[in-house]
Length: 68
Image (cartoon, rainbow, N blue to C red; front, side, top):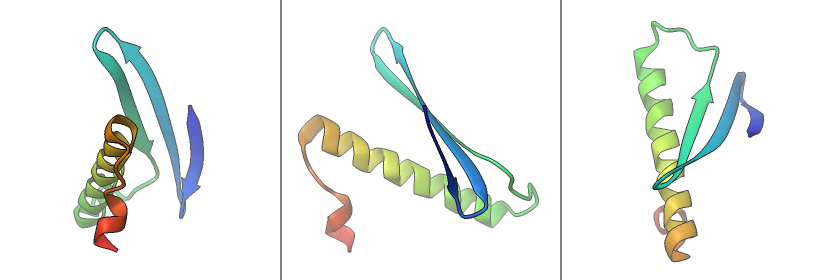
């Protein structure tokens, strides 16, 4: 498990093995549930981060640098 703060929000990233691979569970807490735009933005950020990690681990490709 990895734990850290992203701004004011505590984040945990857990890795669970299963029969076909590894499940990554990312949890970011302490949001105002009425701030839908921020929640959606954060969700998209985590999806992007996990996609970059997958590309790097499975294919040794760094896709994040391509958009900088």
